[in-house]
Image (tube, rainbow, N blue to C red; front, side, top):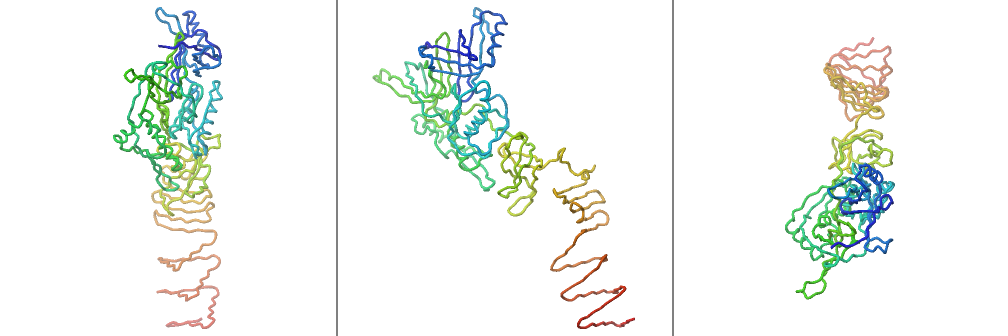
Length: 577
């Protein structure tokens, strides 16, 4: 039977004097919902309109107390926001308005947000995210005590609400995340009082179910800095918390035997082995949250999600009396109902020693599509040709990406291609596994304020060009009959031009000094023409030999031949004039 209780409903701080019925549904894995039904003084639509205008969008507080003589102490308290109002009229019934809504956590779920967090712990990230929503008219308490305290190098919230993002973080690292009606918890709460539920007293009925769950898996991540593959599996880290539970170990054992084949999961971003182990630990614990489930019906007004309950019951007459202990559980969902002062609840619970609670419903991995970004830093400390970039959704903040790799046409140990975008350059970025925490640069792109040389853009796309920021360039012309390869500096004082169309030529030009240095230089040609405007010198530390199969001519206004030791002139006929 239901229990007589005292119920109080406040809307925007104002107490509702007449309440026909109250229902509150609480879940660890989603927002809580509520409905309050109020009788209307008449059936006019204007009366409904006035009530709806007054209450819609306002803060709602629901309190249920078994002891009216203790007005300052409440067995159950709940904070929500009125998001819906409905007019109801039925045959033979009193006109009513139904005010319904969600827990204040809905304020964390009102918009999709893009942002990043660099070198911050889970505690700091959660506090920063919740601070945004706590500035709204409806406030809520926050308790953050994450078990995993490592600083996370780069964490991204991408096109997801604050609520979904926090739930995803909790699932990733095996942290508890739930709202208890008044307070939002991130991390497992500390010790708390156990409520006693006695079958035949305040516990009307209950059942305990066992369910096998697949928990064999292996997760992998590639660390490109160390060039090694990191692995973790269901045996990494702590246990599910049910190994010592008399009932819990039954489905765990059978799952190990029957569902032993491992699932392979590739993880995009994981800074180190400890991070990967933490994720494996969370996955294993989460897989066991439905292994043992207690369901019950009670009239204990002090129950709420996150509360511990100790379940007991009397022995049967055949067992000759006494008390049986069915275990201690933690409530994961509960439905409260009160009408005409009578109260009852229905709940689900899992063993109190469980390492993890049910994850947020509807969780999905954030998915990131290719997008543009601007390079902010190129001085890679690991000398891997990486860069840092800032995405459009990071503008206005000091946030950037971590050091990310740049695609090259060829990359190997000590050889390959090396072309790194410049600081300020706009690049196209893609993501490994579509993970926003795993970006890499695909290439650079032109835009309205950074255009290619107009001379390169020909109607038939006949030019290929490469020019550095100082103006040094390589130009390849593919125009039929005028093909050429040109290498020159910014001012054209140094130039190498190779024409390939028509009669091929090779021109080397410099306004400075041209030096050819080699062990042996061999020049072969049909015709050799050397023209020096100022002077020409030919010097050798060995023998100089000039030979012609036909004629050798040397002519000048003055000719001087000086053999410091001996001068010898030979010929079939020697003429000296």
